[in-house]
Figure 1 (cartoon, rainbow, N blue to C red):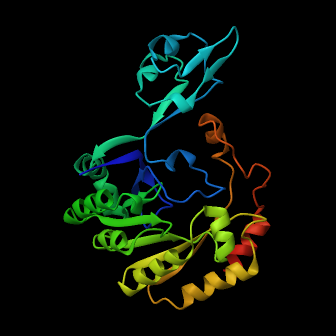
Figure 2: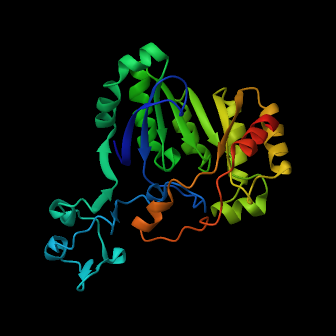
Figure 3: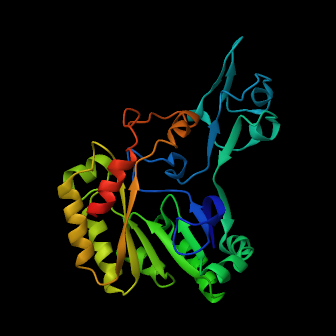
Length: 289
């Protein structure tokens, strides 16, 4: 069982109880306009190019047979539309201006990395969290990792948008102790506008998680000027109150830390004019919810 991942992060404390190892998968069906991990959206490996690190040595140009790298007297242009992410240019870039995001690994290889941190899970009641991207985008791979973890007695969690088929969700829930469930928007038209997908299957899957008796936490990304509305908050509160296995709401205020990644991927960032909320605003949101 193999799948595409971005990275494995250790000693995480914001992705479920205790100290956790977080496996970031690659690929997501949503296209949230505020996404701070754009490198996780596409399933296939991608090249990120940082022009600020480039020293114009032209080694990448010499090894690339796709014509992805072009130079004039002062400028190195990277043509991502031609790139197949073969990685040849990365091996010769001594300035580390080029990196590939995404690699295919097996569930067993992921487990080997997870088990290195087992002592921390035991002492902190932690475990492993599968994040993304979207874990439900690769349900076979995600369930494979979680099954191996359960066999080792490791607490399991996923971070999900909930946008998936019922079959995919049930496959993953079979080995899942906790779900961290993002609700981006509760207005149907706004949800489609902000994320590119329908809200209906997301709410249906949240209800399914509750019916299956799986504990979950609602996570609420709040973006000033887009979804920071009382009516949205009221709907989320109503959803949470009516579900037995909801363990609370977690407020996730907007931040712009991932903005630079859009430049490295040569994509446009649509929220560049949005400011991060101040502490007073964040406290008000948290108190209300």
